[in-house]
Length: 154
Image 1 (tube, one colour):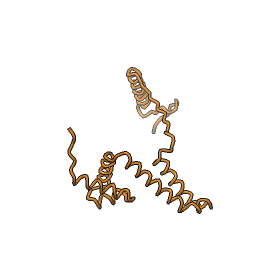
Image 2: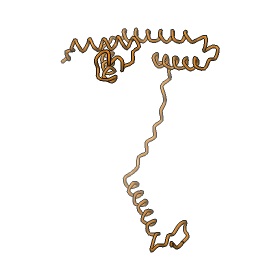
Image 3: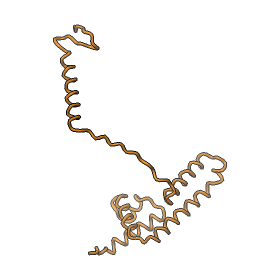
Image 4: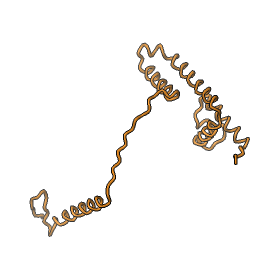
């Protein structure tokens, strides 16, 4: 059974989309639209995005790519001249473009899992207990054994 959507909720979520497209951060969107926190506005944004048809998502992606192009064009002469702040800004723009358009290669991860048998763990626990107990046995009647040599206390 399809869940009936509340028109007031849909209106708020559409306002979130509109403000986000305008570049506003989620904390400001939350304040303007009436959510208690940025996470509430973000959740509304995600719900709305799930309802948007694919073409509209592509249109938004294209708009964001165009904005990145404009930002890059604004600093490009400084980048070519090697001005470090502009180069750093360009790198951030390029990274964002790569994420937006899916240009980055997938990250490979290697996972190592160690599985220990219960008997091994029990034996290791007993070995550690024996070490602790033997250390305690070395301290007797004020005499301390350190590094294999015997000394007297006091």
